[in-house]
Length: 276
Length: 334
Image 1 (cartoon, each protein chain N blue to C red):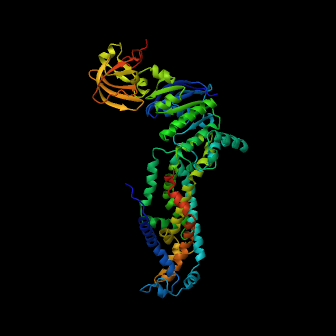
Image 2: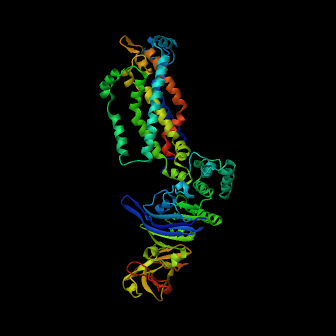
Image 3: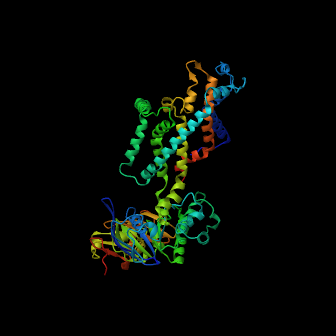
């Protein structure tokens, strides 16, 4: 028997949801608060939650010490570029696997995914040596390439799942309506695949934006994206909590804004299969 | 015009043969129903006509022209799918008009035709809605609208009513039949429901295991089934079959009597047995009777007989309505 939804149950559920939401969000909130404290207050015990001396000097120091805008631009180029190239390769690949599968399609997909199971550190040395030999260390192109290749299996797999959800009947209906293959693609398939493509794109931008392993190992200054910029605040002279927080806040701000504006598209993409 | 001819059509998926040589002549303007149990190849046969599957062997002619190798888009047929297969990102107007847009008609003409089709199907208030905002019956109407607006040579229906509830199914059944008569366009309709087949069809094709068992009008199939399969498939409750000596006395391997052609009485002539179950429908009573030495029977009698489980009963078959079959299951005609 289905349990009745009473106002009390509703209230408890709402409270629980807010609590969980707050717990998940707390580290980010704490980081943002810490970025407005002085270094001393930032690691004071007991910590002060709101009643401290608010200051923006950390932001000024961070921008003064290292060029935030340069790193932000690097992040945009590296995550955007690697995503676009990955999409250009993955869309036709996933399309072919979803609509003209062969006997080996499932094996190909699994093999592609299996490359993600290997720890990246396992191939760090060979890739580092290759990059050194070809002069690709600390270049934007080098980072675009490595992130693109790293995320390609996930992108293909995600797109394949979305394309697979498009009912074959609808494509056949379009054919019965007199649509040629080209027009079927333009008028029926693409509009139906857009939510899937959009959410894959967004997720991949976020993954590439946050990627730290390869960016830290393959770049130092010229091509360094925001991940390297944050890491530079954990230095041998000691941890600068407030400045680290300010740098981190600056680093996540663009992607947070992007995520906020695209959340509808993201959720729609992730529940694509549930809508008949 | 829409005359569809099948000549020796075969279809195999790999080594697995699904259609074993089908010959059929569908006259222009007729409503033909393909009926059979699931897996009999009826949907495959429809998809072969549509051009959504390629024939392995044989010819399909539409108005005398061989269409084997002609893509579905160019055959001039339209199809209504079981899942409706509406374009989810287009409004009702866009869905109905899509075929006309593909045909390159000017926009005012598309609008005029779409609105006319929508008016016929009572869809006018919903023209600007998306398919997800419609009920099952309305979606079904949109799918039909999309089919009729193109004025095709023939309509192909693939179990279009199986996703609707019982009441709506009866209503849509009637609407489709009326619409088809109005438009006088050839229709090929696939269903596994023999009631749909009997009520809608001008001619029925009974399929079994990839073979056409019989092609004829509903009453021909009912009155003169060609073989045991058709005899058992058409009619509800199904025909009673009797073998052994009882059949031999009629000069046949098997004889069949429909439940409605058995007269049940408390005393009188006929097979003697006991009622195992009596199903009372008000207008009819279905009696399940066990006749020792002969077999189990279903008898249908009009109204109430007041018989219940365990009662003694006699069953008298209508002598003119006994179907006889030889040892191959073929009907013996006299």
